[in-house]
Figure 1 (cartoon, one colour):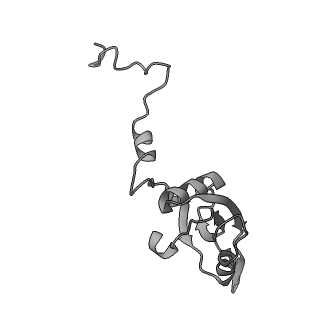
Figure 2 (spheres, rainbow, N blue to C red):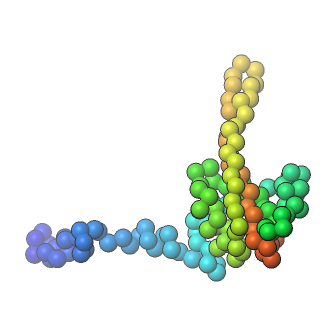
Figure 3 (tube, one colour):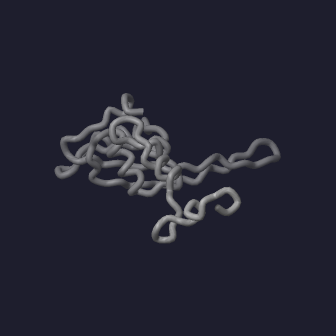
Length: 136
């Protein structure tokens, strides 16, 4: 024993890496069904605008409906695809993203900037649909 610890306790796991306990548990935590806790942080809110309803109504012969979500600005297309598939139990055909820079606004003598955001246009495979109001 060295300072109240056994010699084997202070050593790293096989392969020279420390065991990952807390981080792995947080990543793989399941909320409902297949969805993870982090998936709900990626999808911020659905977008209900005239443009999103027009895009959602259009569908090519090979793809299904398109749904628009406001997403976390630093999320990738792969993260968005995985989150939608796990939260809503659907298959995603494609993800298109669009990042927006916040507008500069003036009040009297000072200027400020609104927060920027990111939108994702998610095209589902044929036969799949999302009831957006129920999901979030």
